[in-house]
Image 1 (cartoon, helix red, strand yellow):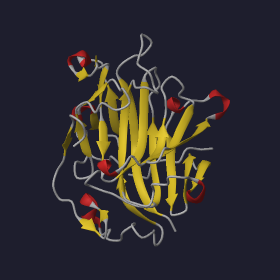
Image 2 (cartoon, one colour; image 1 turned 60 degrees about the vertical axis):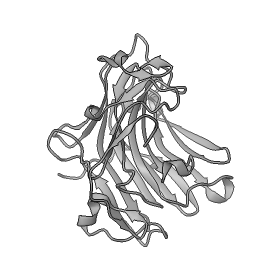
Image 3 (tube, helix red, strand yellow; image 1 turned 90 degrees about the vertical axis):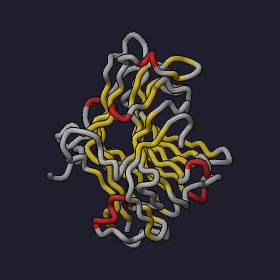
Image 4 (cartoon, helix red, strand yellow; image 1 turned 180 degrees about the vertical axis):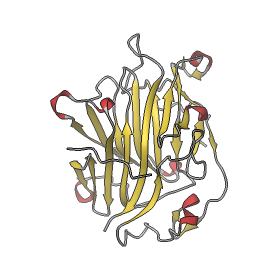
Amino acid sequence: MPVPQKKQQGLGRARLLRSSGVMAVGGLVLGALAGAGLSASLRDGPPGPGLVFSDEFDGPAGPPDLDKWNLIDGHLGYNDELDYYRPENAALDGRGRLVITARDDNAHLFDCRPRRCAATSARLTTEGRFTFTYGRIEARIKVPGGQGMWPAFWARRDPPDAGRGEIDVMEILGRDPGAVHSSLHGDRDLDVTDTYRLPDGQDFAGDFHVFAAEWRKDGICFSVDGLTHACRKKAATPGWEFDRPYFLLLNLAVGGDWAEGPDKSTKFPRHMLVDYVRVSRLG
């Protein structure tokens, strides 16, 4: 199937880099979108189709839009990861893409207790900028391959300390770049994962792909390049945690209990390229 093209032109010891100007409208935090005339809320169900958040990453080379994104600074200590997140590892390339870079330069200087870090990388969130309940979540991404790489595009329950709710639209393990994993995690032991594998030995590191989730009151469906590969229904999923606000995340983790650590075959730097991120109402 052809890949859709881009349009024409406080966590652990970490800190959040933010800017001001957040506005809440009926439970939907719009941040920088407030000036774009987007005033409807998704909290009570989407009234119809329409874009409510997007970043096309079309700005000049330099930092991403801090009115839309927080940049994590520090080691979060999650999943036994071996990465230290640094804001400078996320930047626009001036050609319409966000580049998240994992580097091993001087990574040993950072503390990823109980070990030294294997790499620095980046993690972006819309916490405090944009939250939503129900809608179509999508991003066009080219992931890096390589042992120990763990790119992800996901949404997390807001606020994070309210529970462990996660909608993992895309997770890919660098050692197996032909498979994408889409998961739901929540309280009361909710952990379900669906896996889709590209045909004919293709892998996701070879090109851009569109990863999406359609989140409705009665369930969530995951798709790749417009092909729905999994659906989970609320009525059939004990411990459902998905009727409340969530915020977006992009990150390139290194190592961890699922991805395992990089080895001698892993070549740095590794790059995760993001063409766009969008959230739309569903009709």
